[in-house]
Amino acid sequence: MRDFLRAEAAGGLALLVGSVAALLWVNVVDAGAYASFWHTHVQIGIGGLSIDESLEHWVNDGLMTLFFFLISLEIKRELVTGELRHPKRAALPIIAALGGIVLPIAIFLAVTGGEHASGWGIPMATDAAFAIGVLALLGDRVSEGVKLLLLTIAVVDDVAAIGVIAVAYTDHLSLGWLAAAVGGLLVVVAMRTLGVRRILAYVPIGLFVWVATFESGVHATLAGVALALLTPATPVAGRDVLGILEHRLHPWVNLAILPVFALANAGVKLGGGELSDPAGRRVALAVALGLVVGKFLGIGGATLAALRLRLGALPSGVDRRGLLGAAALGGIGFTVSLFITPLAYEDDPLLAGAAKLGILGGSVVAATIGITIFVTKQIRRT
Image (tube, rainbow, N blue to C red):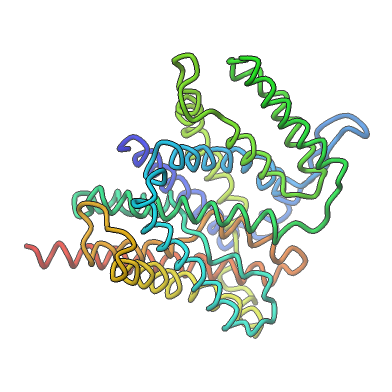
C-alpha cells in the first residue's frame, strides 16, 4: 500500500511538471508552435494497414491506453483482493463516489442550462495521482485511512469514467472491427486456458486488439481496460502476474506517459478569449463548480447520509474532518477530466479551452480547500 501511494504521489508531481511546462509553452514561449507541434501528423504502418493521426491523438489514443490498462489492473485488484471485495467495507466509498459523480454532473447541467451539455462527464472524475500527491505533501497530518478512503473513491470514479467514455463518447461503430477486437480478446482467454504464461506472448495480440478497437469507433483506450480485466488477479504458477505488470508499468505511466499527456493537453492560453465568450464562461464555471462544490458536497453529503443510515463505516483513523478533507481533494479532477474534454468538444476548440480552464482552476481551488482543512486540523490539535 505504501509503495503504491508513493508511486501515485510521484505521478502527481510528474503531472504537475508537465502541466506547468504546457502552460509556459503556450503563454510565455509560443502558443502557435505548441499547437503546430501537437497537430503534426504521424503515420505508423504500411499503406492501407497504417494509422495516420496527430501527435496529440497518438498520446491520447495510444499512450493513454497504458494508463487505462494500469488503472484497470488496480480496479481489478481492488475488486478481487482489495477493499472493494468486502461488501460492507466497499459500501461507503461506493456511495461516496456516486454522490461525487451525480452532483457534479447535475451542477454542470444546471449552470450550462442544457446548452453545450456534452461536457457533462468532465467534472465527474477524481485524479488519484494528484490527490495522493497532495496527501503526500501533508505527511503525518493525514492518516492511512484517509488515503485509503480517497484512493477507493478514485477507483470507483475511474470505473464510472470508463463506462461514460465507452457509452457517451463513442460517435460511430464498425461492427466488423468490433467483432475483430472481441475475437482478439477471446484469443487472450484461450492463451490463458492453454497455460501461456509469458507476458511478452500477449503483446502482439494486445496490439491487434488496440488497432481493432481504434478502427471500431470505440475509444481505443478501452482496449487497455478490457485486456486488464482479463489479467489474472491471483497468482498463476506462483507468479503474481497482475502485480508484476503494475510494478513494471507504474514508473513508465507515472513518470513518462502522464507528464507527456499533461504537456499535450494542459496547454491553454490564460489570457485567451475563452472566458470573454458567454458560452465559454458558462462551461468553465460549470466545470469548476462541479469539481469544487459538486465533489465536496456530493462525497461528503453522501458519506454522512450513509453513516446516518448505517450503510457502512469510515476506515480506521478517519474522523469527520478527515472525511471533509478527502471530499475536498476529490475535486482534483485532472487527468480523466482533460481526457474527456476533447471528446466532448471535439469540434469546438473555444469550449474545450474553457473547460480546461475550469479544470485547472477548479482543481487548484479544491486542492487548496483540502489542504486548508487538514492543516487547520493539525493546528487545532497543537
